Image (cartoon, rainbow, N blue to C red; front, side, top):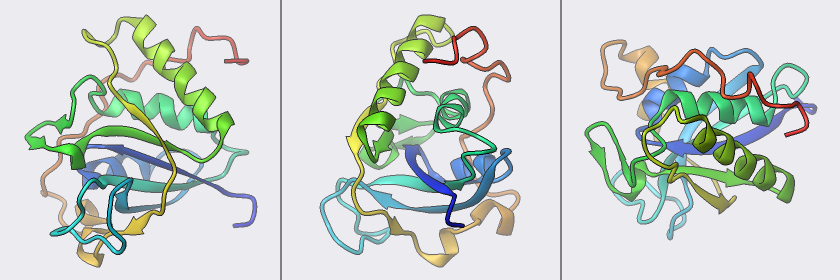
Amino acid sequence: MDNYKKAYIAGGCFWGMEDLFRVRPGIKDTEVGYIGGENDHPTYQNHPGHAEGIEITYNPNETSFKELLDFFFRMHDPTTVDRQGNDRGSSYRSAIFYQNEEEKREAEAMIAIVNESGKWPNEVVTTLEPWSTFWSAEDYHQDYLVKNPNGYTCHFVRSEESFLKNVPPSL
C-alpha cells in the first residue's frame, strides 16, 4: 500500500459516508473516526470539537483527490451548518481536512465549482481545516451499515452528475 494516499473528510454521521465511499472505484479502505477536535483518544461519548469523519485510503492511479471531493459534494448536503439529516451539532459539520497546500487549493477550487454549478440552493459551508490526528472510532462503528444493513443513514447520492464534467482538467 506504499503508493496509496489518504484523504480525510466529514459530512455528517460517519456510517453513511463510509458505506457510500467504500464501493467507489479506486478506494482501497475506509475507516470511521474522529478528527479536528480538542482531546486525545476521543470516544463516541467524549469527542469535543471533533467531527465524525472518515479516512479514505485510495489509489491515486485509479481515482484522484478531486474526484473524491466531487463525490463528497454529491452525497451529502454541504450547505447546512453543523447538520446532516436529523443529526445536529459540530460533530456533523461538513469539513475537508487538508494535508498540504495542494489539497487545500483543490478543495477551494472544488467549493467554487460546486457553488457556481447552482446545484445547491445555498452556498457551500464546508470548512477547510488543516489535518490533525485521525482517531479511529470504536469497533462497533466500523463498517456499521455492513453489519447493520437497515441501520440509520442520512446519506445518499443526490446527483449522479459530476460537478467536474464541464471543468477543465487543470482545475
